[in-house]
Length: 513
Ligand code: MSP
Image (cartoon, rainbow, N blue to C red; front, side, top):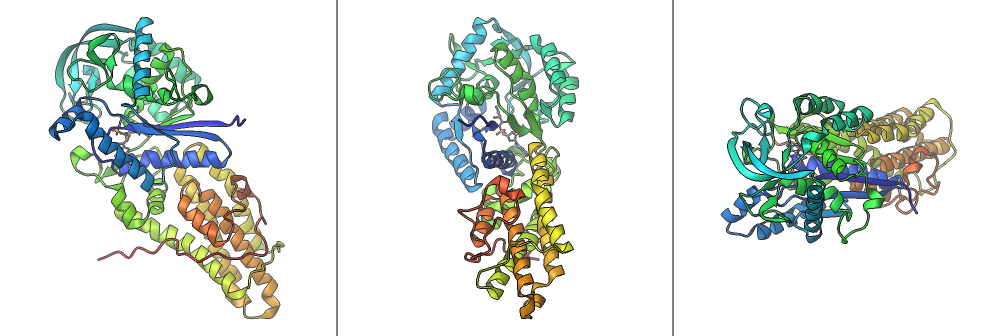
């Protein structure tokens, strides 16, 4: 049995609109980690899904002349299609309208009520309709919703409350004892100073003004409010309080919940408090990355400034988009989506540095040799330098990936490509090819280049799975040496290196004037 387990989640997405490149960002990042862990031999559970209840969906569906379920079914199909386009290797997809989830959420609500962690009262406060969030006065920013900046309205209704106010000290203790719990660390200070220190209030966990939600099991007038329904997906999807799955003991607690920064609050305050109330172990890490902006503003459907990932993929190729998202934007910071920067990355890193390295090497092997290269390492300074950049990279890339520093990990991998390109210039294989005496040296140079390419292709696999496979096919190692651990070994390719069919990895993007 494999005792190396890894559980990673994305947020579950609202199927209220078409997903944009900002949503895609979280999922691509999670996919890279999941693929990396699988390559390292972990038994991975990568969960994503959709958050389908709430007033907003009810309203949109009614406006569209559909039932909420008809409406979400269509959108969920399009979300699944998008993940397939983006090559997202999720293991499980949860919909909050799935019967097993509904069953579990009702049982969870009942348990919290039985334990006296939920009680009935009256809510009156500020409510942001688009975000479906209640806010206290002190949480408002300039009198408006602190998440989206829109107007809030006064709202009063009978509701059930979760005793969140009991958890301030426990949460502070949790953060203190687990400095890694909230990442990046700056977000932990934000939670403490902006939310916990001013005092946590009990949380409204039911609504009676709309119907599209999971009914409170003992009170037909109420549906369970979105955060209890949504956050619990991370455990119901493993079979907590249902018979659909039974991996809860295997995968829980979660290794990392990944999301953008504005929902960190829910995951680092409400979620741990709910788990504490249920006497369940807490997730190990919550990582809140930055936003993808457009012209300095958060991309969102309601602002009409979204970029459609499917169109980008059709235009530039899925691996180019995966690369751009994770290379250009340091994970954790906000960054504007920039088409010019995207084209630059594709042309300079992918087409030039990587694509040329592979195509030049394969062409030279085809041109100068019938197949057999020379494996024995000749020690010249060029060879040693190339080999050492290759062999030191795996550990460096691993360290970055463990800390979700995707951009730095890619920078390291591309250092190998740069060094290998420089090695071609230094060793000038086309000059070596002119004389028979240099044939051995030439065979050795081309072997070293092939090894560098093999190592790059392994390290790149989590990021650019299709491209890595294409590279491996060209140096003919598809069924051979593609274990992650083999990226720090030298000399694994056969001397008898039969090149595969040549394939252009990244055509240069010609920019129209
Ligand atoms: N349904 C809730 C999450 C519940 S998790 C238990 C939700 N859904 S969402 O569809 O609005 O957003 C899903 C994720 O995409 C969130 O992490 C959100 O922050 C992220 N992003 C939405 N717009 C984004 C950008 N412009 N940039 C980066 N991430 C963005 O919130």
